[in-house]
Length: 164
Image 1 (cartoon, rainbow, N blue to C red):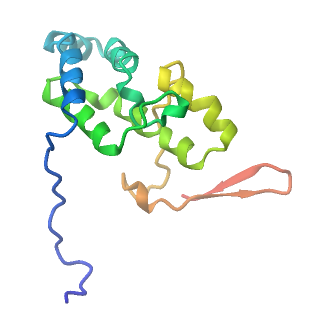
Image 2 (image 1 turned 30 degrees about the horizontal axis):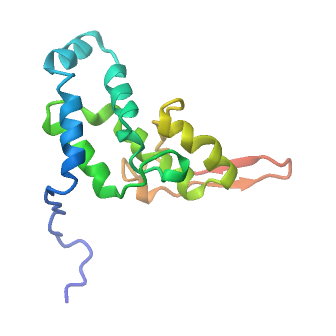
């Protein structure tokens, strides 16, 4: 048994799956409305692809991971992967919308019942955009699994964030 933690590990390989054919077909049809000229114009004008993100939201794709009770589709991670994979395969760019699919997981996992009820339906229908998160520690780079900041309550009833 190799106990050297610095030994080279094989790269992670997740093969593309033909699963979710109905989702892939729907996303592919949607992407046809956003040809390369759309993306080139946005790039030249340094603009956000609002029409594309709105179309994905209206079709329900960006709410794929939100449970049905909160207005989403309640699908597993593999379905979200199929959505993003298809967007890129069709020549579009999922960079502007992938966080909308995933950052809501913080509310889903750690939010109170009231927070879930207040925010998840709005994220699902697109009336609330939740699309950013901060990586705050300079020693971890983009590996958010290594972050170690914490919030400590103060005597004044507020919180103080401790980290780098």
